[in-house]
Image (cartoon, rainbow, N blue to C red; front, side, top):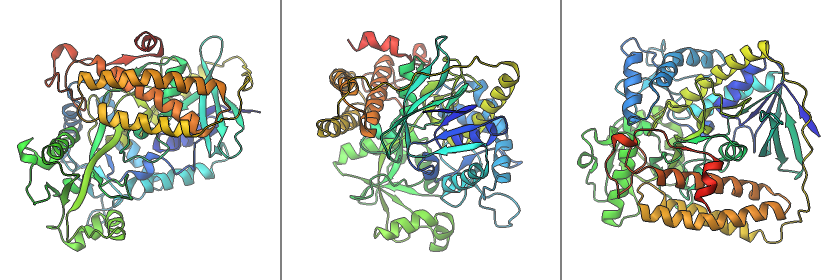
Length: 530
């Protein structure tokens, strides 16, 4: 069955939901999301959204902080437009019902300070900012009669017409296994990142790089895939492997220390705990390797219970449920994969190099983050580019009308039922562990070469499974995960320096000659994978 609409949006985080809300004013929207609509990285964002809302702050300061964090690879024009358009998008979120925490007077938003920021500019809703944004936007979308929400649908492949324009997507209904055709004159990828490519991640299970992989297979260019941000402080716990301990704790005075109480960050950077995430994550990694310990500790015991209750209620309650009282004892933490600064390359309107295909949010590489994302700039980027895609499509809808196109129905060929699901499980676990050990926080040429050799074999095996067997959600995700892992490895091998989030022991310093984006396409990668 072909589900027709004016716009298809894949993903239900801030970028997807805000896009859907806006585009519904122009026509019908199919909002397709792989699990429940709230299962998005946005829902798990604790820190907040950075924007210039204080008269003592300025666009120039926010721009400079972003450029410094990005280590020379930010597109300054993109940074400036994002920063300057940010306040309007924040006010729009408030109008849609997002309730940011107010200051003590109750007249203005309470602005937090996070690592890399020179001013307090992070609007937050306690420590569950993402959940609050997700709630308000989902309510707005569910009320809109022009938006049809398809939960539990996972994208398989993009649909291109004979002229190479994107005209929709094939997606599987996870409940029934049926594959549906969604067609529209414009498709927006807002599918988030790919944290599950690593064994330790702060991301939910849905983050398998589906949008990046689908765009890559269809011929789009990926940019800067080597720059994976590892959040320095994920809870170290045997049963809670992906609970994030927000950046905001360090912004509010949290101290990193070893088991014996020794603080160590000043050895690595004069900004200590307020250094950018890449520096903090590498420092923790170095200390763990040096001491042989399994974790370090984030100490908040110098703060009052009253302060912790009001500023970090969700984190505090979660830790208490696990037997950790952050007011009385330090929190055990380790780094974990958190955010992809790279993704599908786009221009300032969210357009990819495939006509009628857009990418926004973490799935995209807009040029905002460069080699390292500044804390709380991701929700900002998602909201700004959702609006910019709306403006572009509003304009093009007036000027261009595509000819009718009827996609071919999904053809399973001679595929048979999957004989051994254990093969998928084995490959899934191998890829994630391989990426953690060889393509993690610290890399070397030898580790990257080993990773690529293994991925060559795994890619062949997975692609054979894709053609031979009837698809399952696990096989779809595995295929996407393998595509993204390979793109990260190839991109890391191409960068012969250390810059931002990419640190290679064989090239420990940045080089002026390497100050450029790493671009990779399926066509260019084929030669390297032979």
